[in-house]
Length: 68
Image 1 (cartoon, rainbow, N blue to C red):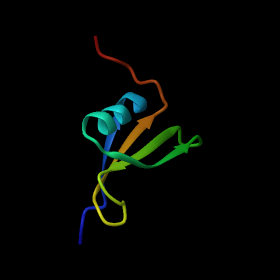
Image 2 (spheres, rainbow, N blue to C red):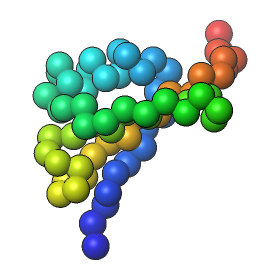
Image 3 (cartoon, rainbow, N blue to C red):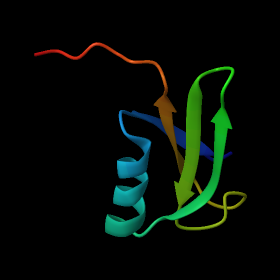
Image 4 (cartoon, one colour):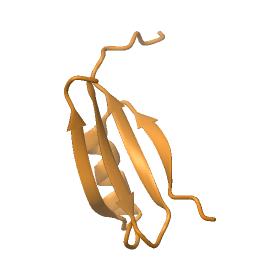
């Protein structure tokens, strides 16, 4: 048994992808938009998704309140 992926919810998908790819050297393995669910996913990792654990970065398109 192995961990397939771990999900991280983010406020800015583009900046998060930039961090994981440019700073940590991960590759974008796949991206998927879910317009009906109003969220987007990007799967990033160092190897093939079928063989290695990856990170699923999730962005919700709803506006969330911010704290001052």
